Structure formats: C-alpha cells, structure tokens
Length: 149
Image (tube, rainbow, N blue to C red; front, side, top):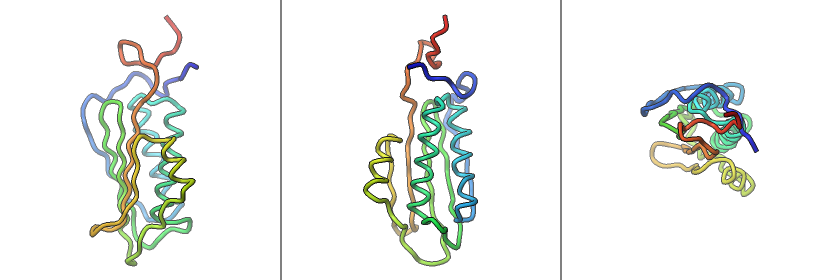
C-alpha cells in the first residue's frame, strides 16, 4: 500500500518545542489536535499517521478532562525531532481532582495508534504523555515511498 505524504519533504532536522495553553473544555481541546496534526505534517508523517495521532490526542485529553471539561487549563508541550513527535499535557485545574482515566478500550486503541502513552497524577497534578514515530516505508533520502521513479 502506498502512503502519501501530507506535506513536502521533511523540514525538521533538530529538536524543538511548541507550547500551547488552552481552557480545559472540549471546544478548545480541538486546538491540541490541530497543532499535533500540523507538526506531524512538517515531520513527514503520512495522512494515516496524522489521523492516528489526532485520535490519540482525543483519547488522552478526554482521559484528562472528561467529556464536559474542567475549570482550568491544559498545558501542552509538543517536542519535535526528526521522525518523532512527543506530546505532554498537564491539567492545571481549579479543583483538586484526579484525571478521569482511560478505559480498557481506550488503552487498546492508544496501543494501536501511538508508540508510547501514559496518563497519571503526581504532585504536579494530572498529566499525559504520548510518543508517535513515523513507521512507513522510506527511500534512501528519508522521503515517503510514492511509487514514482
């Protein structure tokens, strides 16, 4: 199966970070998905890989805030490096509350979508982490295999 590249050749050659702070409500958490998709596109992820990433962000944000959201913010850090995107989300909620958590089905879904994932609470509050790496065929120039000469 041929996978199309979302954008042109990979531009990212160093490690960098993007930070985003949004209200912890569903209508604003879509910005987390859009940001992840844009960064993954710059890393040369395929459309399928980007959609997997968007779904994983949804699952983890829901696990952190629930379907109705929380009072406070979610602080996201996107670490970009060649071929890999790591996303960390921290809930800064006004109420002292644990994350909703992940269902068994969510854990299975995340296991299929991303390379690493976690959702937990410590002294800094609730947080999640995910890692998504490119896993598609590449030619010797590290570009997506397109079937053209």
